[in-house]
Length: 466
Image (cartoon, rainbow, N blue to C red):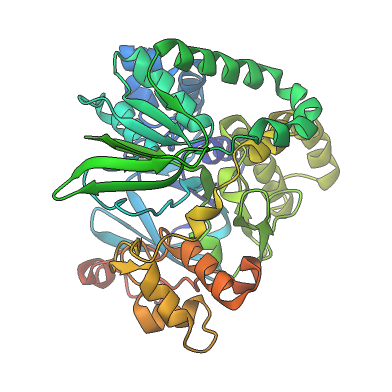
């Protein structure tokens, strides 16, 4: 017989842990599953091991704040199962998962997806060379393994995470070869109309200014308005080239290149479930369509945190608590009027936490060239397909992303389109001269993660079907 819960939470980051805390306080039975070995998510990764250590201190106060949340989560009474992968969710809601090579089907009245965000895929010529990583990957190495680059890296990209990582790397005693800032040179002008509203997040503004000052004081080269990034090498990166805002091309030696072009919501599961999605023009991505409690178009499926729209760690915490209130109302544990009273201060807090987002979106829009890579650029890393091959297939009739998948195998690899989906959609939109939101995204099929036959065979015959 399968286990049953009022609420199953996918993800033990800020949103998932706070949702579990609130749900348990309201009397719901809660199971939290996460593919990481410990709670914290990407933002508070390894918080229990790193808090109070030299690494934890250099990561800053906001990182350290995750320890109290993780401790409260551990003591909440929620069942927590790390290193667990969700690979299918069926109506009902039957959630299929694997842990330690054993598969199981769990019955849940409600499912909360707190899967966070992923770094925006930024394909450019040479991005698949060894020695080219994302800034997020480099930060994970710092948090998990206390690793900092031995060779000074070039950092290409823009946005808060780039500034934060550079400050953390400098605090850790690392060096930086240079920063290739890919934000538009007129970004501050775009931000001016949103500046007044952003004053509600004045602490975040001051923090950003302090990061900027620290980066400037470090004295490494900073190049603004960078475009046309390319990496060169045989067995690994050896050089990179770029174009400056005045149109001049530069070429420099490079042992390590870290890139980052913002983050987008992780929508893989909501796409697989057939939830409605809305196109965000500001962030150039799809987000699940949610009600005031974070419920999707599929009753019983909720989304909280950056998976429902980029907002950061504090906003994710608040969204997780709000979703738990809505779930408790549906479960009969809380009267709706009482839930609304409890939610009022949370909603005010959330508005303050999101006040800076319009300004950040205006300052750091994704570069248009990210969505129109040269023909020789690998777009689908799993199947090693180039932008030119995708464009050639796009000329055969008017294929949608799923037909392109059938014709070229783009999106059929282990990442299942997480890395190439948006690029393929933009290439098709340009070929068909249609808005990308009309092109849509891949149709995501289970299993959501790679699954062995042994895991599948381990399912109890009476616990569900596949």
